[in-house]
Amino acid sequence: MEQDNSEDDVGPPEDDTQPSFPHGLSDSEAVEVLWQVRAQRRQAEPDLPDTVTCLTTPEGCIVYLVGTAHFSDSSKKDVATTIRAVQPDVVVVELCQYRVSMLKMDEKTLLKEAKDINFEKVQQAIKQNGVMSGLMQILLLKVSAHITEQLGMAPGGEFREAFKEAGKVPFCKFHLGDRPIPVTFKRAIAALSLWQKARLAWGLCFLSDPISKEDVEKCKQKDLLEQTMSEMIGEFPALHRTIVAERDIYLTHTLRQAARCVEAPTNAEKVPAVVVGVVGMGHVPGIERNWDKELNIHEIMSVAPPSRFGWVLRSAFKGGMWGLLGYACFRASKRVGRALLSLPSVQSLLENMRTPAV
Image (cartoon, rainbow, N blue to C red; front, side, top):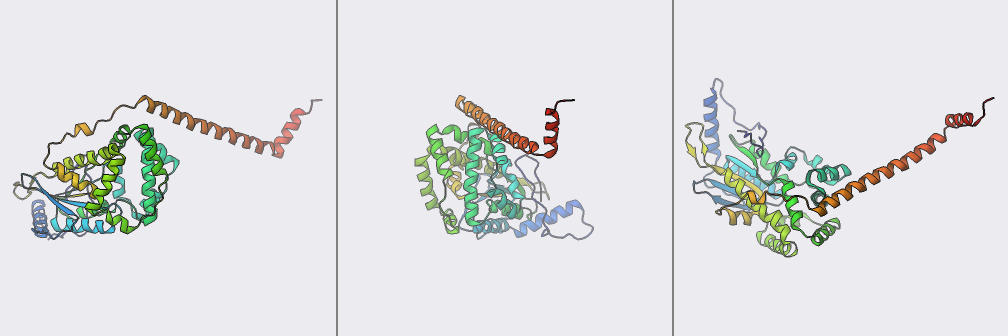
């Protein structure tokens, strides 16, 4: 297993299923054994799930794109089956560095974190993304918590499965392929009108519809998903563009970056790479459409400076928070004062102060 040092790569943990070596092997001989083991495990014509789409590059590199639902047990199985069958050189997941912590957290901790949206998280989100983007992130976390509570399942299981399985494949690298979430939120908020922001916030605040595991599995059906996307485009076209279409472009870019010829350690010969991409099913059609196009990544990474309205809102929010803090301190000081005055020792001291000296 190899580990890349770029900021969007994460080294998977070593796994005890790696082959054992005879005593006395040199480093170069051990590398050759691992290379041969992976070649033997890699299936030439793998029987893969229906959720997998195969893409190729002019150099002959292959990308197996696994379309997933983010709260799905069967998606985890699809990911594991694909990685074991194709023994990839690189695994790319729909995560950025701001969400990488979910890879190493256990399910129990993630369930607790998803349900526990407190004032500290609100502060952190606002500090990281600004007032409007931060509040929108909290509302989306609330939606995630709602689904988590309904299903009893933490999000990102397919990414944790990919991380675990990549650690079992010799020489496999693990890449984070999504656009940084602060950029996505800031561009999404900037693209909405004030009325659209209010409508979206209202809808997210009062989301209470029940959801079942069957509903989640339907998200893996392309025709149903495209219908849902069409409804979303009609309601919030700017939001669809920034949260879905732009990220389709970014994910396509990172997958193509990963799908480059790799150097065989045995003879330094360049060979086509095999890549597994793990993304939400909603991104698969967009990645397919963009695969052979020339992409402009710089355009979708720019963030407009805060508007005057945003500055006013941020100042009002901070003023409100300081006001609440001041009021809380005032109320607390009154309670403390009353408590002190009720103490016998303090009452005695006050009586002594009121008694004139003889």
